[in-house]
Image (tube, rainbow, N blue to C red; front, side, top):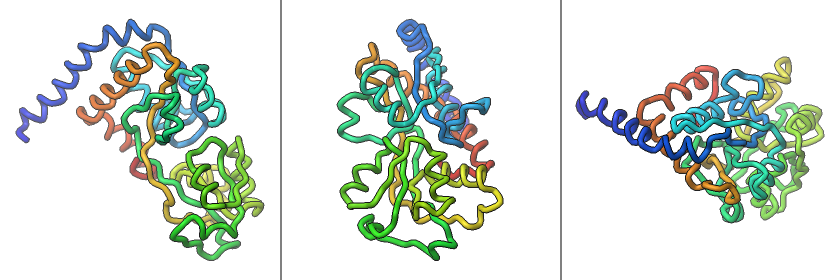
Length: 258
């Protein structure tokens, strides 16, 4: 592509987005309420940008003049709120047929890599080819996560918690063999909460790698329009290089490629 072509594409994207702003701004004059949970480094309540995923969502919707208001609740409550229209949207969620019954899905925000964390001093090395091979382990997971169904189908022994702090304390105390969590999130929290004992933890290969999306309640008036505005904003961020610049800042802090 020529230099002129490189400049022309972002300009076209910007002009296309500008043409849609009047409708988006009119349809969503009040801030859109988005339910999320504390999930650093992607979602952080006290960080100025509120995390990598939050920053991407805010800027994608902001490109259409749409403001957002984050409400931090447990994941299960966020999903239930979108189902019943209590919350307009939430993120990042994996696509399931059941969720598609009550929510519109945006284009992907990022990839999520789920692994099992364990203590090296309790288990030398944990390897597996199928989830069924993990039936002999006690596992702690988060209520509302996508992996509930595949874990049930695999017959795994899982104790689900609403609070991530409790789940990590169970792993640290040896009350659970495995903790199922996103790779970046798990290592971030372990390094933050157990810095003196970080060397005792290890993680398996990913058992699931899937994209996370913004979901919008089908009970929200103009919900599809909100998804369309978000998708246009994400395309603009990617086309202008802003997406890569945002991700790059977090990658420099040790966050894996989203």
